[in-house]
Length: 86
Length: 166
Image (spheres, rainbow over the protein chains, first blue to last red):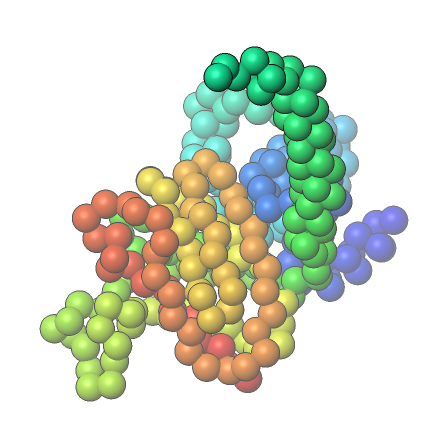
């Protein structure tokens, strides 16, 4: 599984088609991957695990989300006003 | 000379209201399904984000790092001979041909619309929403478009230029 993840990351071109978000509105796709990365990172850090497994989510949200959105969300997380549950 | 035989036709009026409504629903439901089916699944080679501002576009190529740049219309005083007035920009969106591209379009302020008519593309740029459009260009060249949603004083002066290279 970790090896598959490494291969997947090595062969990463761009965010692949996600059947959970098949239509034109990809807002939720960006949001979900951002949340998933930070949740994964938080969980792995708490367990003392390898956070490199979370890198997939990071690559996907970096591909999809406008950088201004990511910057705003990062600031909100730092201030404690982020609306999502991490 | 009264209209007693033609003034009351409740049953017929009910039938010719309900029946066409049913027919229209029977037409609309498959039509909507087909509309969503035309949004094909494709496997893009890369993703570019296009963010509308008043009155310019920002393009972000972030699959492999962070290339971000603004694209302003060339003012008439800065045009070189051969440049197109109101269409040419300082930084074009450079893309390879024959590669499926996913464009993610949004806006930072008001509504805009990212359009390239010669590629059959028009997608609204809505603040707070990320709209996806995909395309694969087959011919190299320069493709022009203009903002297609009224967005203020310089709505006509924020064009889009794609440069497709082989």
